[in-house]
Amino acid sequence: MNKKESAPSVPRAVQDCRELLLWMIPHLDKLPRNRRFTLGEKLENRLLIILESLVTAAYAPNKRTFLFLANRDLEVCRHLWRLCYDFRAIPLNSYQHGGKLTSRLFFL
Image (cartoon, rainbow, N blue to C red):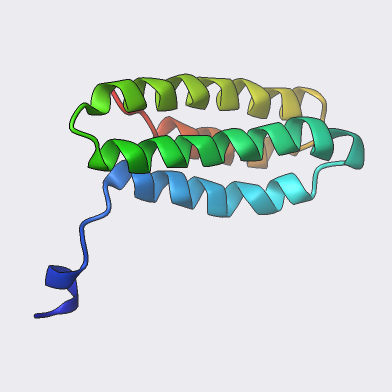
């Protein structure tokens, strides 16, 4: 049995969310101190909750509830990310790239 046959397939949404976390967490670590422990911490926690919802949905017979929650939390993350930009805590190019990564995620 080769590696592809033995490992369960990871849903694309889970992969995309993981990529977003891998990119965003180092950027959140660079936020100014007064924003890191408010916006940064809230954003990181919310993204981890989204990842948890997506993994749960992958195994749940009724995925819709978990995907709805993930979509709601993702929309909150988009607003928090915009606030980071509005407070000038992140540069324009990071804001735009983060926006592109979050726009790849949509679950329903």
